[in-house]
Amino acid sequence: MGRTTVDFFWICDANYAHFLELGVASALYFHPDATLYVYDLCDSPSEKIAAIAARYPSVKIVPWPEKRWVRLPLANTIDFSYYMPNWNLRDELKYWSRKIRYAVTSRRKSDWIVNKTEWMNNQRRKILVWAQKAACAADCLSRSENNLIFLDADAIPLCALHDVFEKEFDVALTLRRIPDVRVGLDKGVKMSLPLPYHAVNAGVLFFKKGTKSFSFVDVWASKMQVVPYHMAEQTALSMLCLDADVDAFRQYEKNLSLNLPGDESVIIQLLSCDIFNNTYLDDCSNIPAGVKVAHFKGYLHQDIYFSRISKAILARLA
Image (cartoon, rainbow, N blue to C red):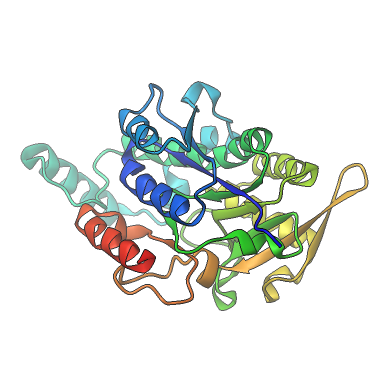
């Protein structure tokens, strides 16, 4: 039986263009017949993203400037105390010390907060950027005639992914390591409602072509509007999984049947992050053999690691 064509899409701005190009090259290596959709978040077309499209004719840029963005109520109401519920006098003094040092020396560590307003604006923007995934998925499903994979810009495919779609599902998500799943209150922020805040990772998503994927994305978008948590897009996905089955997070690749309005149902499968969305990479030069998508997060975003990541990916491809 021949392989079905798989298309890909990303949501990206100029800051992640170097990771995007690595992902594009890898996706095309394994899927040379794929169409690759890149949703450009920049208000003006990104020259870096345009340069990638010029090098790879299979890349189709979809402008997605801020005026098109889906809005979330949470982004308007969230404040500094949400992220820093235990902020005290000592923290305030440290904040002002760092603020003064930065003003005098123009030097700062990456994790320093030296302007609360600027820092909060960045947090609100992150919430809104993440919230675009459902809207862009709906748009891309209308453009693509094939099965569709979403990848975060820093998530790199390491093998062909056609076989994923031989599994029985309408939508497949990736679940963190089961012992790491957390349902309750995230003590790192100000929460009053228990939620599955650490379960599904939304960095890799699989959509089978058809109306059921559209229906799922519509319900996902609606769910995001009412999630009182800053990572609304993946928390909404986790909540939908629990709506389908209260024991959803106990095993991988179990069919979860989510009932939708109009007597429609969607089959969700939860795949292992270790295999399909591996965010557990402490050493970018040592990727476990079974990993199909490597997701380089956190400190690995620093420029000093990118050449090592590129070498590791090229070695894996070879």
